Image 1: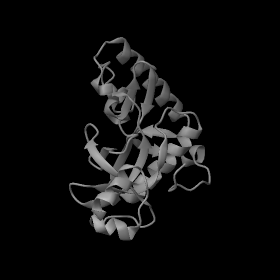
Image 2 (image 1 turned 120 degrees about the vertical axis):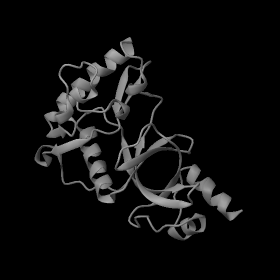
Image 3 (image 1 turned 135 degrees about the vertical axis):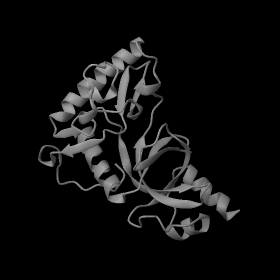
Length: 210
């Protein structure tokens, strides 16, 4: 019965203590600097070699990006904050938390980001008005991020003879969400190969909810 109450708190987006977390499952992979919050549900699309992306189970779903390198996740959080502050169309980062996987009964550190009613650009029908609009917005955003010191990991794979090759934009289409009614683009990942932090960073620290 106590387990159900703790699980309900996580689903409601409430924090629990490490002692309470240990009642639900193992915390051996957790980062004790981060709060214990959220329950992960379904995986969101294809997964990369270094991370797994889930949606949380709470009423307002969030994106939970579990990375195999905790330091890399913190860096991603800081980068997202800076890009968001500069008006780029990236998802709003909410912070670093230890999230609970009910099937595996374990907590893992994750970067939590906002999620809206959107469709992955990779799932849009090619040549549709929505697809063409999304591509224009992706190109615009990648050009602006390059001015902030961003360099895409995928630049080396660009095939200039293939209009539909997503690497021409430097961003994988599965990492770009598009809201057709609002015609709004949101990037959830941007796979940087390099970043000129002198152009991007401030002295702010990551790790707490905005």
